[in-house]
Image (cartoon, rainbow, N blue to C red; front, side, top):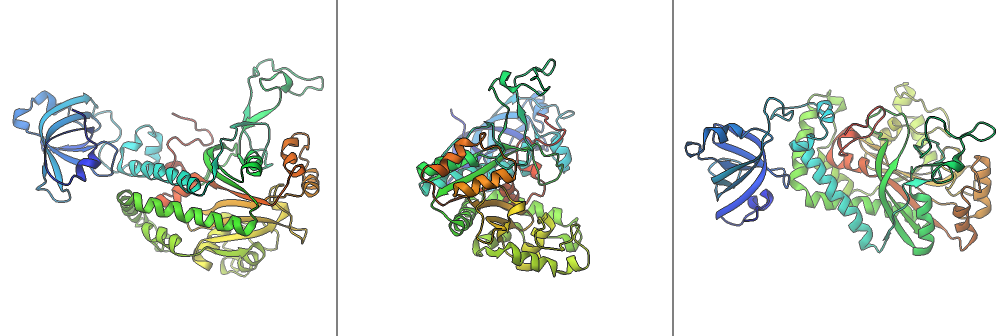
Length: 477
């Protein structure tokens, strides 16, 4: 007999004479009631054991974390909070779990403790819910772009180019660390390396994505990216997933429209598909917020916050206007910001972004037309010669969630910008070819998937929305 998922059993239309279920024991009380979970839903199913006719040895082995299989009748439950339970006729222990050693006992654990046990934390309600939401969001990303006729492109993970120009890249090499071959001037001789040149793990699939957009019209990438940025914060990971659409013939306005429509689509999808998990995560967040001072608590509950993004257009504000607002704001005048805004040209920090979203506009904000000298080389220079057609989307509690731009389609301007920044033209000859042969206006953006999951789940640390976080000094598991 094939076992049935607990989610299906709980959604049954009627009682059943015999069902077969497998899962892991969450709790076992009074030598009679097993709370069983198989990961298909946030909800456990109660299994009632006939303890008088079950051997003492078997009862002893029904412990938190043990894997078991049960056969019995699906009956209407007498207990509150559940429609059905299983009246157990047969019970088999599939895998024991020593209660003295299993870390995930049914009690409240700190998030730090759970990070140290990332291989087992998904057995808790919170992390089961987070990972199911992550999975559904991931599917929604593909569904959105596929419905719109985008082509999914797999850009290289090993690359010779630095798309962001920040130099924060992990090197990929097959050279020995002892006795590394050197050139005559003492530098590492990468010609003797596996690829015959210096290579790194990608920070973005954008540059390669652009080349495909200039043939296929509209493409998207969704894959892992890496930053060797020694930033030990709740918002940064060394390995994370990026969603990057690129669209030929789209200008900055089209780009903003696409990003807003995309975000609202995937959030709506997950709200509809993950109602139980989101309701649980909302309750979890509410409990966490009670520990904070009133001033630091969110104004909206989790589901209200998601509806707020769905029901409100994103406010579009130029960088110049945002600087004026920040310069004249109370926290700036009272020196409450860690980074005081004195003049135009400042690189906005998370505290400024959150002020604009949470205090000033009280809705998601799209900032555009940033100073050229704080943005990447590939962004289109405006006619004023000092700003570029860049845009960032800012969200409550998160700050920047999307960064994008209209790309510089003019060959001469792009070459000048690369020269000014010391970027080797020969290294990016293939990228420049897209401006030599049939260049056209095109735009795209990057969305850090984990920041989206962070927003949707109400979690506050990005390490809690990816299965195995990679951060400075930590590559465990």
